Amino acid sequence: MDSLPRTLAAHPAGASPVEAGDVRQIAAAEAEGHAALVASAQRGDNRAFAVLIELYQNTVYGFLRARLTEPADAEDLCQEVFLRCYLGREKLSRAAAVGPWLIGIARNLLREHVRRVHRRKEVAWTELCLELDSLASEHEQHHDEALAHLPVCLESLGQSAREAIDLRYRMQLRMAEIGLQLKRSEGAVKLLVHRARAALRHCLDRRLKKAS
Image (cartoon, rainbow, N blue to C red; front, side):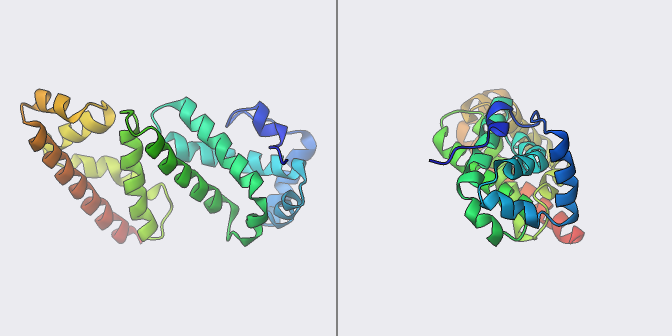
């Protein structure tokens, strides 16, 4: 049975050292578009796969951390991304680029995470990020483009809508709790949040179109 190289298993995301020979391999891989490295990893070369981890783990972890409230969840899912990559390494050669392929795995894992822990309030932020990520995909832009425009679009909302989004996604309050703070019914809060999300999508869509 295949097992993940010990480089990832022993070190969490962002903390996986490589040997001097591996550093030279990283430089060579970058110069050659990672083609030789990918080919070696597909043949079961654990050192080559460890170098792929070193090259991409910060990107994958950063993507996950921006969309999860708990660092431990980001570390766990980052490990799962590379485990799935290793077990499905025969698909590497069919990927247009390794980085986007790994981000695709990470995004799928986020969706699974949301379904698995749907009753936990901390997934609310992840759900909003996934929704906004879909806008960047529609415009064929980098996955962080939508989040980069988020602060400006939040400022464009009315005060009540901005407060509702902040209480729901940053403070992670339930709709009923938000209603108590805003002195509105739970139904009115749900409608307010729905309209605020629609306004955010419209703002982000407009800014992504302008940037493309």
